[in-house]
Length: 87
Image (cartoon, rainbow, N blue to C red; front, side, top):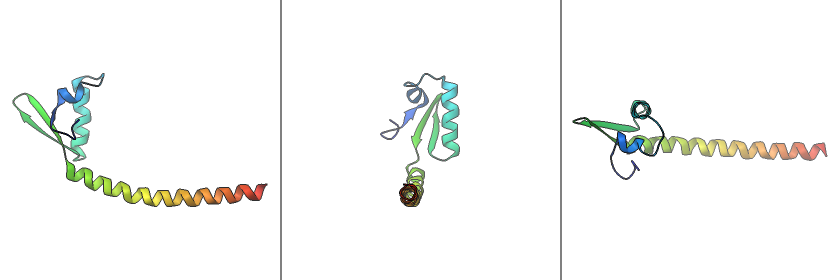
């Protein structure tokens, strides 16, 4: 796992039935999102998670998770009340 230590692109590709080119495209997307940092050592590309960016993303997701959870709870109550009125 990349969360444990840096990994080469080949190591990241290993468990997937995808070409290295396809894996590289996915990694580039993660790089553009600043979730992964890549450095080159000779011909080897080494990837590392950007923990700060992931932490910020987690905070953002938690905020909206609370928001939507509350909204879905309210929706469920409304639907239950509407169902009771039908019967």
